[in-house]
Length: 471
View 1 (cartoon, one colour):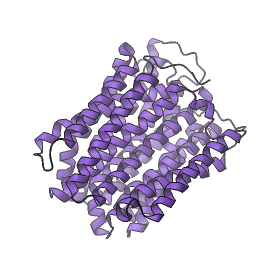
View 2 (cartoon, helix red, strand yellow; view 1 turned 90 degrees about the horizontal axis):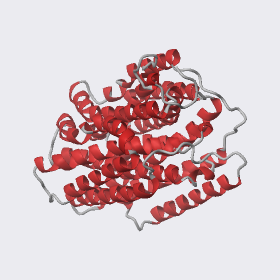
View 3 (tube, one colour; view 1 turned 135 degrees about the horizontal axis):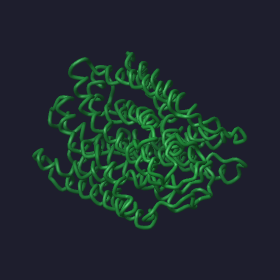
View 4 (cartoon, one colour; view 1 turned 90 degrees about the vertical axis):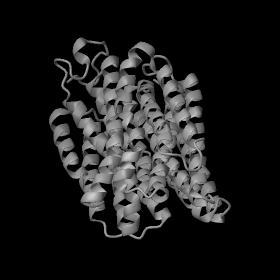
């Protein structure tokens, strides 16, 4: 293994899996990331059954899904800062332990409130795992070519988890019960911890960098208020005083975060990093494509079960075209990036995603299932195809000492996008006169998000990722 600081020259043995280059660090990191993404997708086909067994409302179902994402998104920057300060491997392993224990708590929950609480703890574990995952890959594979391949495989692991999630969730729910949707994380978490401790080198620590707790508090408040407003708007209405008050407080929290970061001696997120167009633009692209894709998965899952009467397993099979495409799209884009650069791949992926969701919105109120296969495939392939380029762009634009922070920023943006897509999708379904109108409106909004991401790619993603442009 090559330690951080090794010159970044391409060498034949730098690529993952080449002679002299162990795959163990990649497998260890990807095992942790697999659990995190699996819990985003596996729950979608299980929540209707969970809601019935635990007597949860539609809003309660949204919180079972979004409580995890809320804490995950709100604490990612803290996870990144802790990794930069205390060592990315240490924080990564801590996250794996927390996530595994919380998964056991989810499986043992006897009420909707207990399940939401355990999901919040899972979100904390995920927030410690994900920033360290990219930083540890950056450390283990220092050359640009090796790193691009590693990021591609990391992204494909998200695709595997996303594709396995609905099928695995449906299979578990219809055979051994929904609780095994969470218990399945226990062996994966144990294997990940063993692999990491045995095969991943300890990371450098920077104890002179204190944590910016006021900024973290403002960020958590901003994310929590945003998701709470979107979750409750469908039930209360967009003009409800509590919704308006929550939106106003969310704006104030965002302003407080920016002000604090301007004044802090050691900010949680140095604002100078955001002056890098590749870094800030890449994060915005990640937010938009997660918003569109995971909003589509959530609303489509409810549609297949509530409107078409499919079982959880058949819903997973119905969603498979969307998520199956993600399994190899990231690997393909990682290979093509060496020839084409990142911008054409991100642009192509976002245009495909937009075409897919626009096709669903235009398919009519009750389309035959075969008409939905191509739109779902386009959205799944396009999202994953763009992921590697967006990831590499953000990570290459940040200096090494802020690799954990850059990873956290990118994944914070993505998880805010996921949570917003789920919350807005649920609110549209609840507020619409009929289910299919809300569904098609959500698909049209998702197509617009993909198009916006494509426009950003033209201006923010270079053909070749910059090296430490924000340094």
